[in-house]
Length: 492
View 1 (cartoon, rainbow, N blue to C red):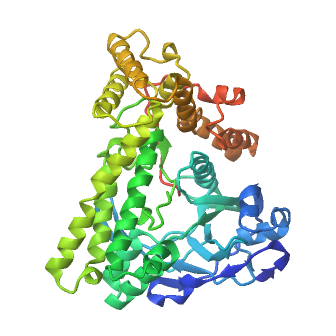
View 2: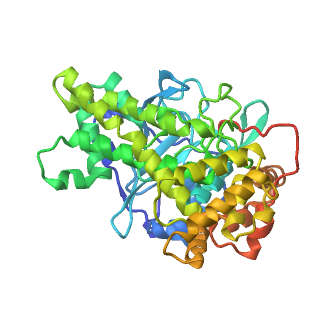
């Protein structure tokens, strides 16, 4: 392997490689035969301080394929564990390599990770590779989430490898370059608690605090910094999952290894967006019991955070009973934090600036009516934004007419004008989401025909979902009705 040119703008630091080696294995990506760049995120590259023009060519393709190691990088695969559908197991980066941490011109730090870059010590018999379709799906959804202003890992590039991988059939191989504030997970702490020492756990916690919550140490008080750390992670996750619910996003695989300490959404395998409103909606083919259904996501997040709290017990207090009491107190705050975020977001979706005691009833009544009449989630709020209730599946329904009257009366009570309310709703109710049939259309064109124009047009529309522009209109239509339920699959 050769070093890429400095002209590309790489500015690596490798702080994760300086924590105890129990948390990672040094590992280069495995070279591929004939890589080809198929999509490159130039705006993201520029924000990272990279030379987009240079990287969107041979030198970038070589790096993103794992055929060249940038100067200053220190590739490694991270170790972690996790509860997968409630069952605890040892995991780790089985098909991903962290090149290092890019320091941006503004002083921010971002992981640069190659996903699908070959086997690692954590591959557990897998080939370490990834298929083109799932990597393109992650690119689309992660960038859509960014457009929706939801904290998320992002996608810098996808390259094809020129090699086929074996799944149920032969599929074209690909590698995704993922950008993240970090890849530290709840599962990383579970790994430390189960296979490391208390000192290892402390080092990891101190590292996470310094990297993601520096204000805790800067505070300089004598408070328990590990409790403050736990509380901050809880706050971020309560806010994140509320944002998911507010746009109808269903992650699909909320295992503890897929919950970041930074509060970013990560791992877009079987994820999808809900069309018809129903809290029981599940798309993932492997979630047969509905554990990670749309309506369960807030509660699963709380469960995952309780697992994080368990790992921190030795740091919270030297006495077990007191440590448990401290942890329970922190976890006990989650529900109030989540519902505060959620109902604040729902009031905004209805153009409400202030809070009144009957608002929760108003919100729940609308959702119940939407469920009863199988109303589209996104388009219903879009229609209400422009005061066109006739454009919804609720039009003419007696219950909805009564609700609409109550809503109008509630809006008339506030000081803000109707125009201000409508602007608020425009700002928080997206015109478009990555509709499942549109995502599948883009993936089919790219994978089956080598046509990336469909995907590029979709990405362009999703870049500013709150524009409510004429160009977005065609992307608001629903798929043709079918009795076959839509299913998603883990990104392999």
